[in-house]
Length: 144
Image (cartoon, rainbow, N blue to C red; front, side):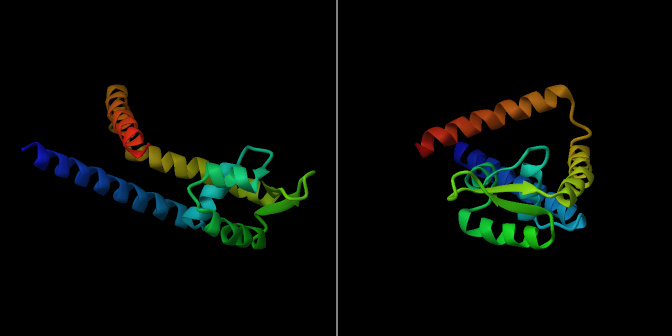
């Protein structure tokens, strides 16, 4: 019986994540971004910028994909790359156009996402977060 519960729970978790990502991707595409592009814009927004290494650590984008996404954002005039004091470091920041796009898109995308949870009350979020944190800790222990 516990085996069935485990499989059902994992399936539900996976289905929820897939549906959340699908809805999120739809909102992001409506603003003219790919998911990876928006991940970078959202990470750089309201910051003075960061190194390529920091950007890679703070986003969900693999190092191999990051360069291509940065190339496309730069060609759109949304980001600029600068060499730091250490010439080996590349510093990435939003341009004025990129900052304007961030300021227009980010609040709206977050608001639309928040609307998905409009029927959730404080105690619903607390219960959900407690269970997700418990699962994350369990998975972290298994991964180490």
